[in-house]
Length: 455
Image: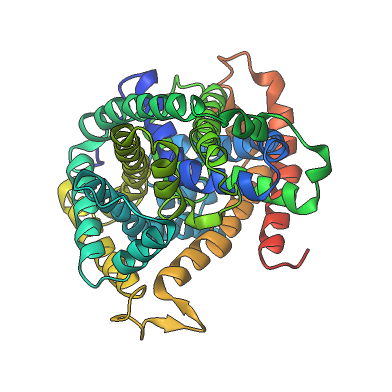
């Protein structure tokens, strides 16, 4: 059987923007701000940055090593290093995690598209009760969310089918700069509002009294999830890296971009929220219920500006969701293409159709039509979120660290880390190995236990 020619990113910029696009998603622009709001503001950010350095970067480098060494989809890359041992199962679990996340994540991405449309036709106007009812009516509708889920997955398919360079890399070079420009525009508008300085102080003036065990563990968990670790994305993208790619440097650059986007998202939201007296700990409802009302109130004297900012905000969300969907989709596309030995277009279509089906059932489970799609009080959508986010991700991350730190020969790990001794970062190798053998597994175990309130 002829070996499939392996694609590569064409430039260092392509590597950074594509992989950063994988990490930058709704977790940065949605989850990070409300986590900051619920956990004391500036102290959470400080602890988060430290956790990215000690946990996020070593875990990312580990996936880079596995992906580039394997030069294959995530499952096959693990299998190559595992040498027929049960460790190969980690790769299959990573692919499955990415596949399942694609299905329900596309539903949320579809909501962002609906809100762009609603902003365009003037439906994002009303009192707080209106926005709450609007979201409940839309998310529970039997057709509308499904329509937008199919649209966003269709767009993702059109990008993925064109391959690594002409699809993922080109799209990332367009989407990521656009995302940054939109983010900076909204940050500028938000920070110029009356009373915005209170929101800025909340983000950058630490309150030491807010530090406790829950804040630390919340920051630890956010640093893990925000970098797209343990869902196959990082490992799959690394399989397209050239041998000259500096893995450690790339991980640092991507983590910096990811953290900057998250902090800018806070600067976009909290100054506006404080300017109209909205509590910063609004929780998961922040994006689709609280923020439309915040933008409307904050720019009440300039309705056209408020309309424009609201539109740009949901466009920003959609771009962030799309860059993450691209990487999630590619995990499964690469797997099916190589394991079934079929064309990229067929593999991408298979993933698109399959995840559309998952998305349909997840979306229906949130409305009256899908009330039967509930179990133990959780909808199918919530179960997908719970199983992948709270069980699969920490387990895959934990096992990946153990695999790299304790099973894979250190010579292989060191060769990949130092680009076969051609880089001068060898002095960091022992620190990396220490972190991935001891610190990261223990930290991930704490995250896992904390989720179930066992610690």
